[in-house]
Image 1 (cartoon, rainbow, N blue to C red):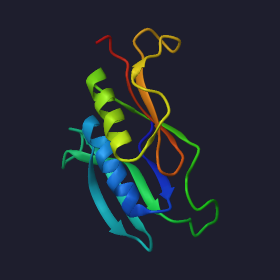
Image 2: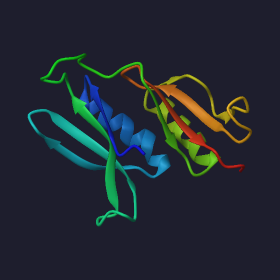
Image 3: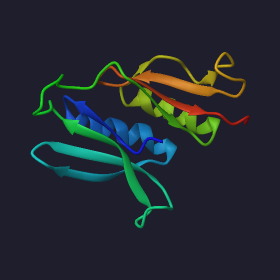
Image 4: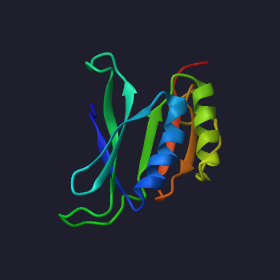
Length: 137
């Protein structure tokens, strides 16, 4: 089971605004913003297992790692689970309004499985991001 993931971005303010808008329809909110020698923002989904009801599982860090590697994370595919098809639709609309590029409008993808309802967009860094609902609704 995954606990969290971190993505490097070229513009933390842009990432913060973009992901705040895009993840809100899925129930996520920004729960952390700080600086550890680099600017960092974290987004959380309310989880009852955490004392404060939130645990950041998606982090964005401004700029390249001091340990090397590319200056930003790009070309990745990241999917968030939605609780309904309406959430997938709202994610897609919010993403387009925030400047994402369409990479697959909301709809059934029966070649994955009969109830796979997803939407795909390209974020400002070039990542293919998705919201998906696996429920038959």
